[in-house]
Image 1: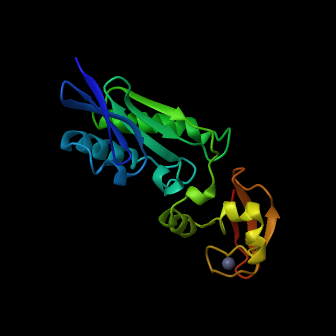
Image 2 (image 1 turned 120 degrees about the vertical axis):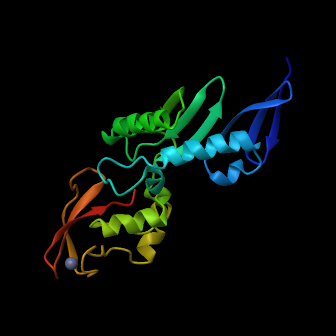
Length: 205
Ligand SMILES: [Zn+2]
């Protein structure tokens, strides 16, 4: 029995007796799988499609892909399907539900051995949220995070004067913060001074 490993693109392909039987390397984007043999590629696409159906329990319009909570997918015969997710903040109660939903979705898709890992480092940041995710969030009535967390840390956001949260309903920037914490710790509570509607702002973290 000969096991060999070969790097193709970002994927480490494991070959046993000249048969490709798994890719051990973590794959976080579909760009990474283009070089895989067709059966394995099909497995990745199938698993990815199943994971894509899992939504955030608190904001059901957002998938875990939109949020950037989904970090990686790895398929191998020894470990089965391993999915890594990063909580939006440590102790986020939605995370155990998300892990469960990922297992159920992959089970329904026919994958038997499924493991969901939580990765806490590096910490999740709103920078990982996709642009489509931010649009969906605003349409849902929650103001999207403004600016980049990485720029906030370096003080660049202040330089650009990013302070006004836009009302998700009437788009007015004439808004005020009512409370640092909204329905969850991820959000601050705001009110629009024009349409008078209260709304949540998903904080840039
Ligand atoms: Zn408004």
